Image (cartoon, rainbow, N blue to C red; front, side):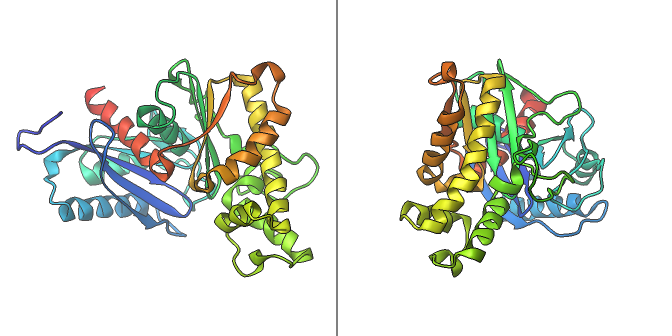
Length: 323
């Protein structure tokens, strides 16, 4: 166990920026969470207000936890969208209002006077699950984060795949509807996340409820209730699940056909539906999977839940200090 000269256990900060919330955690060198919390993501950010919000929140909770400054060694940040991790630039963020080519790493490092690493949020999630989650022991992994949007992280032969332009794993922007669909925040039409993300699932539900109000979802519409009521044989909820999980299953079968990983892990807030999500998704995945891959590319739920991103971001921060 690493100890500072002042006698305190050292910690790494993990930050996971999402479209709805920003999650934070102080994590030790073994991947254990010392303290975690979250704040709402703001609708409008000026050039440096995001870095200010993150810094202020970390300092507030450090003092609240009675931690010395010297105990915090570095900060890892997971951000939604393609990232130039070498230069610490968030190239674009479709689900939060930030200027393109935002130099978040430098701004945050200047504010905190600490080493900072910037990574794609889904990349952080797959790193977290490999460190202490459901991907431990695997070398070829695909992780899907399903929340406000859909992100993807890929590890091949033990190495994180970022791609030539920092956009590897943008599974949410696979075209899921070839000739129709709604406009995605990225500017395209018919992206997978317009159908199978949390917001996409609710949107599909509203469309179906418009023509069939014979469902408890009329007064209790949420992703959690959609899967819960589908498990109770609510006809409308079951149709929502079918219309959203089928394109997701097809997309994952296509990902498996290209990469043939050992495991595809489903994480993010929507994964909290558990087997009510996994069972229909498994059906459509198996139905469309290349037969020779059955049994060689497994489908699993993430075990870290919404903590995967902050844990993986902290792992990245740890690499800055001790490798």
